[in-house]
Image (cartoon, rainbow, N blue to C red; front, side, top):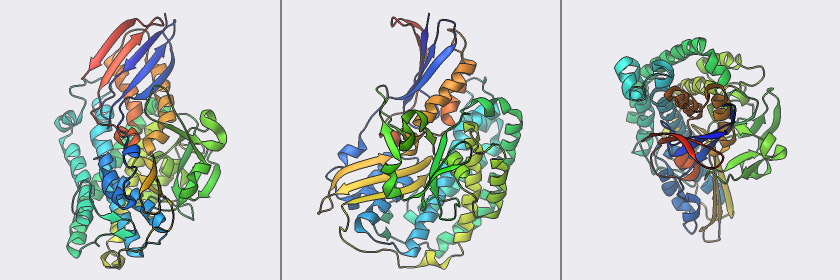
Length: 474
């Protein structure tokens, strides 16, 4: 008899979701679905607000990546004002975004994902978490916490608080980098570099012993999308859109973020609040694309800094064309941390960051503004339409987790098809399926604007609706 396995909630990700695994009469997995089951509706309740308030409102979407919404929202405001912000303001925004990349990637790698491949997929759930990591790898866990703290320190030095800084505004930023703040960051850099090198060396050893996971955890052809510089270099807070296919061929390039609707469509699932963007010219079936660290490293030609460029060369050796295994998101995150540290070090010697020329001033010069920036999880779009008084008439937020939605569905299906056998639901099987989602480090509060904590329920359901077996974790 065919069955349905439901994993609800999925753990160690931000937000609340569940996974359904469908099993046929022979006990083989016939498909799987990733459902986001909570909704809050930020886009709707922002209507009627002044666009100038949005950099203060939208960071409240998420406590993990508030900086991403802050910066994308401010850029949308720049577009409504139709201004070029001062050079110093652009560099300062970039510095804060680098701090955001460091802190978020460190959280994902050390706290959310490392317990799986360092403590073992089959280890008890009560131990397979950050506390188990502290008990078994105390120095590594401590270093990971410190690395995240370093990224948060940069955010606080610039924005006066680690979470929800009210700092970037339409037209620029409120304050420059102080000399004292620069020295505080500089003094911490050697430790941050050392921790990142330790993590890179560790994960390379993990790759040598986890080839099974490399092959099975979201390893399939897809497109990849992100921002790149004019010369094809790594970009995180500017540039234009590039799409690449799994062979490594560029299929669309240098598309201005304001024109994203010409290449990105959005489909809706009847079993999830999470929308499913796709590459519009190919349709929702063939236009599946991935964003985030894996995509950014695939589409760029260079990182622009020496240590990260050397790691990028090694990363690209894992693919024949593009690197297609989602397990290598972890490696890509570490390379982006390294690149961020190198760029931070370079910025600290830039006099522009101490300038007082920080804001451009203008009124409403365009009734629509699009801001795009690379959040840790991938490309983030804020699209605002206003009236002549600057009041929002329509808001559209396209976030990384949504853009990865179709790929996450394929990933859980691929893993489940290999590990799920018959009606028995094992902890190890559940954890492997969950880890396929953790590879993407999804942020569901951003993607659907959901409130609540992530948890897990697995059900096997017969075609007639009878629950054959159920496992719940609160």
